[in-house]
Image (cartoon, rainbow, N blue to C red; front, side, top):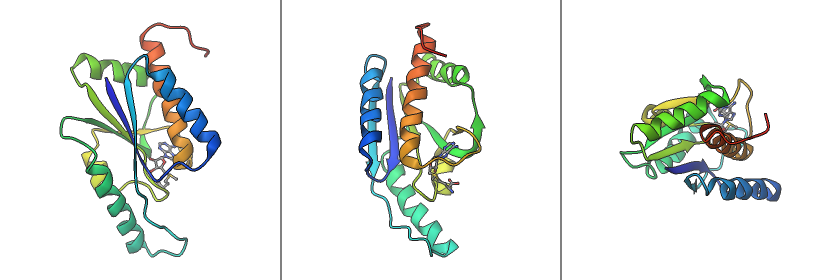
Length: 159
Ligand SMILES: C[S@@+](CC[C@H](N)C(=O)[O-])C[C@H]1O[C@@H](n2cnc3c(N)ncnc32)[C@H](O)[C@@H]1O
């Protein structure tokens, strides 16, 4: 399975980079994982609602340009559907079974994802009602994808 993690902006924190590199390495035995970073737009505190929409739209266009038509897209969104780790594992297993070899998880920038990206997504996945920083979200997502593969292979993984 080819999994793309499409994110907005460059990862700055060294401690997150190290964690992400570790999980990409661990996942290499299960899937081909690629992290795609698209440039972010400047989003100062004082933007109007319209300006914030424009920021999301521009970032959204860059995200959509990285997604091919045959890719199954899971958008990460606070208001999406919450799943247990076992349910996520089952979803990934079903995608593989039904021949969906390309999938992309999409993480928004500091203002979130545009309507267009949400419309393109096949599903929206929530990790809780809490807001996580988008850079930390990459690490949390990778750990859960790794956990999902371990669950599907029946391999031991601490609970
Ligand atoms: C800082 S958050 C954006 C917050 C923005 N106000 C919103 O509601 O989308 C950046 C990105 O991280 C991801 N994210 C943050 N918290 C999340 C959660 N609890 N569940 C799923 N995705 C989350 C989403 O992709 C979001 O677009």
